[in-house]
Image 1 (tube, rainbow, N blue to C red):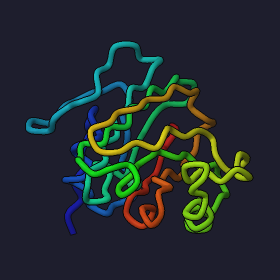
Image 2: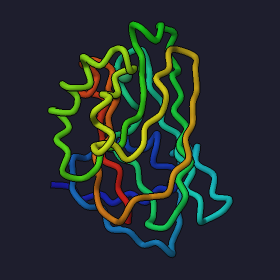
Image 3: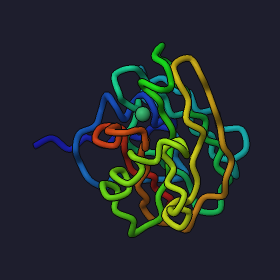
Length: 172
Ligand code: ZN
């Protein structure tokens, strides 16, 4: 068993490549290193603002299944769809769920909420924040305050996508 600890500031590309299936990675907030070879899309300008870029594609995938911010930070999340397919065929959004909300149950409920772009009208209490639904070539972004420290689920609520397009939003 190998135990590899990666510290990366740009957790976007790297997570996909080095998803070791391990659990908690040890964090040393003071020490920021970028390992050679890992691309960084995140730029640290203001430490009180976490800028996240999440990329979806035509293969029904996000480029990462883990997003990390710190409690008290403002979060600027940009969702980019790098594919070419139409929003009606391969639409993507980012939905951040409150703790205790079952991701599968929510995904199932959202799948039939076509009229409201797969955000069920009666589910406001389930959702912390969500982006617009976008198609290939489009980009959208949202800003919100990081919720209380803890781990939250995120997903794309387009029908069927939550099976692959989901991950953990971690607030430290
Ligand atoms: Zn999607």
